[in-house]
Length: 359
Image 1 (spheres, rainbow, N blue to C red):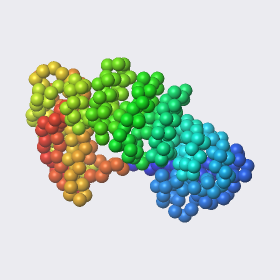
Image 2 (cartoon, one colour):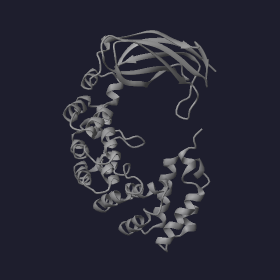
Image 3 (cartoon, rainbow, N blue to C red):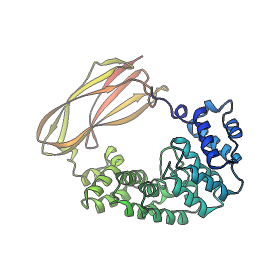
Image 4 (cartoon, rainbow, N blue to C red):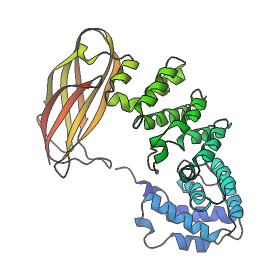
């Protein structure tokens, strides 16, 4: 099992190293006080973000009370801290800088070059959306791709691990000039953020994203990739307009037969083999997926879609074989019961079969 973030970072060793960096750049920094404040009895039990918030508060207790002076020290340390502990620096701005608007925005743009400020900017956007988004639009012209990415990533409506930006879930229009400015960015790192932002928007405003996709599709390889990746949730959901836009065959032009699982009863930790035949009636693009209907601990069912392939298929029969692991993961635990597997072609369910999962 992969090591948890909270155990990889914010360790006694890394906190001591962080204290040394601060002391080397600010002689009045009390290393002993800082480490004692951070490394409480409960520190090791905290989750990653809890450790980050706690460490930021301890930094605040050891830095000058004057916010501007504290920020200058934090700016000097930013290039020196090479691990996830550096996220404390933009978090400091989030926790203590709202009353120092210009200083704080400038600091976040600097800190994001060495860690990420995408979480810290969000309360600022919520407080003064017009001012904050005007600043983010300026950052789209920055020479550093990490700063340009921050302009897009920081205003994603549904950024993972972060507070949602509810105003943009209701009306995403303030985001669109930023995405327009970055759609042909030279950095794939930046373009991927643009696509992820579009995907976030598609969950609340599919028509907005489909409109952008129609406008951008065919402009360049960059924009073609962005809109395809940005519409992935719509494609996975079988949105007919998205399917048509990207040229996928009508599901009525395809059928599935012979869906079987091998074996019909498996144990948690085993692989499930399943086979089927897809018949294509005319040549075209085919997005092939399957959905597992998982039984949860409560007996309720939750579904997850997995992609098999996306390619052009010629008319005729095509045999498909696939394995799916039922090993427990840190992100998914399996429970015994009657499960189902469903084959989906171009967003349309075509066949399903049940199987038994035992302890």
